[in-house]
Length: 419
Image 1 (tube, one colour):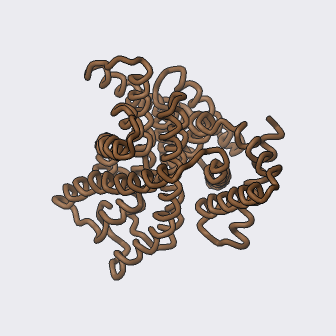
Image 2 (cartoon, rainbow, N blue to C red):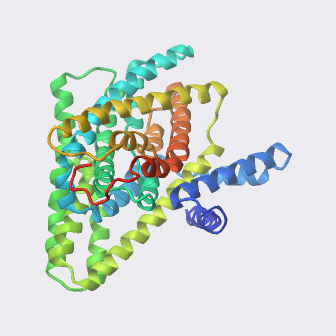
């Protein structure tokens, strides 16, 4: 295990250095691109008769349980770190578009993508049940703004736009995991529960996650408020994430949602009422560093998964069609929410276009695909999910900044609006 961790951290550090020194792309996208280039070089060497290095790296990557690593460990840290730096007042101001997109948006996207996937798979003669198509819709519906936030900052995107993208992503990850879990339980049981049973399971996971996150977040806030020792205070937040994630699994509530709520409490109540200036500085530094390191590891792993997954031209073509279908479903979920919002507030120009194109897919989708039961459906959906995620990060992630600049040119940047 130590050798595995050492090898992967060293490789990721090297890829991060190469991107910063020579490639110059936004950090997370750049790490993934350099990991992809590294994977392609290894495959090229293997094709020319030098398979040793590729086989060694394949052996290293295959020992990493991506799904378990991300869903049970990394995601909790990433969501807590993201929520820690979100202003709760801003979040409340934009609560309606965020709430609609993170709840009904996920449910609508799951259904639309599932239906289109069922049709597209049928065109290729692949017999995938509608339930598995809905599972694909659920796993591909959460947006991952990690790769795009840095680009949005350099593009000088408005505060409402950035807040909505961040707020939506923090909560729709948890919602999508809950929807996926419910659908996966139905698929594994082989029997369809009633609407009431499904709703109760959803409520237990989602509302339970909110309540549990609020409880542990407030408890740690009170502990931080009672002392002035930054080392212990930082350690308490670390214990909150590790212990809270483990306990949420035992309680069968949503760990991702719990970590978002706890992070919001510590980042707002804790920061404003319980921390002195030195504690804030060390708390921010610790979680920003941990967030950057975990993102680098995550995107390097996504890039190097190319060495393990089988592909075919039909998979590439189907993934291309599904990428278009996913953008369509994103538009279908974003447009009504923003058009409804316009009845009460002024909405910045180009908001629908930016939110549609800015809905990147990321590591959560790959991790959920890896959680599917073994079988031909899993192999197909995993391969297509990986292609969709790569194309989303590369095409949308590298062009969203230009879109923001194009549609907001001449717009004032201080907007008291939602989104």
